[in-house]
Image (cartoon, rainbow, N blue to C red; front, side):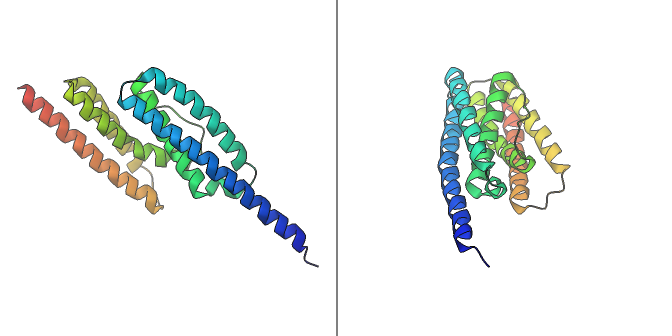
Length: 186
């Protein structure tokens, strides 16, 4: 005999956890945007505080996601983790000049990594305005490296492929910016 009470409870429990996941995802998403905003304004001390907060919020979010395997593939979770990856990669690049590995699902990491060049272009334009050509070249080289690595994958997911195409256009923008800066220097 079908246990409808049990079925109803399982579905209600999932829905309840999904709602918690959505709320916590918003917290991670908001902090990710704040980290990036602080870094674009050269406020590394504030970005560092925000990174500590986002790590704590991500841990809570992962705790919710672990309650049911399906939760890790919910859209709000995927977007929050992708933004988290983008924010932390940008933070470490601005602070230390390098990319770091993060403990997230590979697909989520690649999605966040593919968004990073957009922020790096914004940073390069800011630095170009300050005449910091070497830093702009370093950013261009990093985006070139990211693009080269992403091309070595065989992505079947349309979202990832679109993002990789966007990296190509970001790289072109940076190449044009570097060329323009070098021509102006002559």
